[in-house]
Amino acid sequence: MSEHRHPGTQKAWLPGIEALRGIAALTVVSHHMWTLSREPRFPGSFLMEGFGNWGVNLFFMLSGFLLAETFWNERPADLRVYWIRRIFRIAPAYYVNVAILFLFFAGPHLVFSQTGAKQVAASFTFTHALFPSTASSLNVNGALWTLTIEMMLYAFLPLLALAVKRAPWLSLALIALTGLAWRGLVAFAGDGLREFYFHGAAVDTGVESLFIARQFIGALAIFALGIGARWLVVRGHCARVYRWFPRMSTSLFILMAIPSALLLHWVERGSNFRNGLFFVGYDFVVMLLMVPALIMAAYPGEFSPSPLRSVSTWLGERSYSIYLWHFPLILAVYERGPLRHLPATGGYAWRLPLVLVLTLVFASVSYATVERPGMEWGRRITQRLRQPQPQPTKERALA
Image (cartoon, rainbow, N blue to C red; front, top):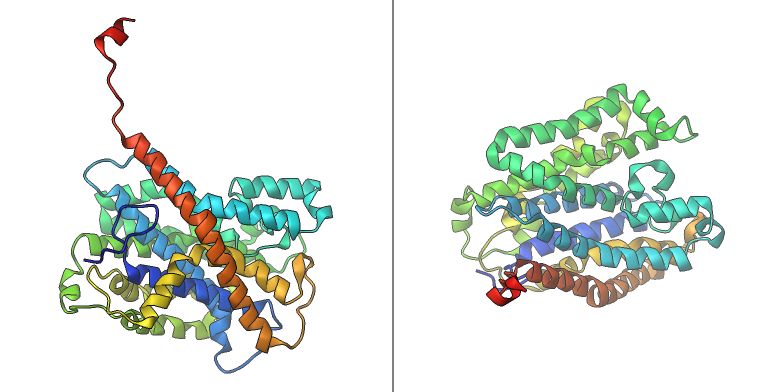
């Protein structure tokens, strides 16, 4: 069994899962480097276009996979411990990122306005992506919308996980169908939802539909895949498969991700609500093909040492900070800023490496000085909560 331990916990951690996180982070970075540029077309550019949603959905699936087991133990989970760990895992690095970007990157006229105050309040409470009026993050970081979805998962996961514990396959089916039904509502009868969210604003109908489909309820099908994969692993259904491998190779489950990535050829079609059934099921099918790779990444034994494993695990441990910082750095290197200027032309030979280097530097600093200490603070607080309280002596009781 691997002795690698995740910061801020006392649990053995799986390098394969960290590697998947690293892959998810790199795909999101690649997507935004392409979409925030002038979107050059080349053979295989569909991968760049689809990698963003693919990476985000992989993050969502990993969240369901990693957290659901908390509520399947014989002893009831302490919700105080759960929430403190989750808050200290996400909030410190996020608040530092938002504070710096709002103060030094966003336009002052926008920050110190009624719109800015509303955006700051929504960002502080992780509710910014619930409605279009606060979803922009003052145009400084277009990647932050997923944290609203992540926080909503944390809020509803105890109910979802306990339902799966009582009736596994029925509950998973109902959770997945709820998410797919939401996307179906957007595709086939979404005018009312579009009016509710956008109030007739001059926004492209396709953009409106994607925004609504990506709300928390629309992500339930992806979370169900992660929770279901964890159930298979925890209940020993994958033990026989794991016995076939005396050691696991990182390259194996990366190769297993190829079928899912190839489906990105149809990402434009799957993102268009006018394509009905395709819009409803596309993301779900793409992530369903990732489930075998996820299960193999959760291999409980030793991983063969390799540069690929070392690099991907290093990236995975810093994936959250990579996710937080890459978007504004791309805006800066492409000379776009928060005012939506057109990206600079040319210079890709030095701009792209510079984005990667700066992202890794900022992510490493954020991880070392904010993210990891935040996890450790959360662990210490929950340890104090778990310590038995001293019983009062007889003399104190009578005092």
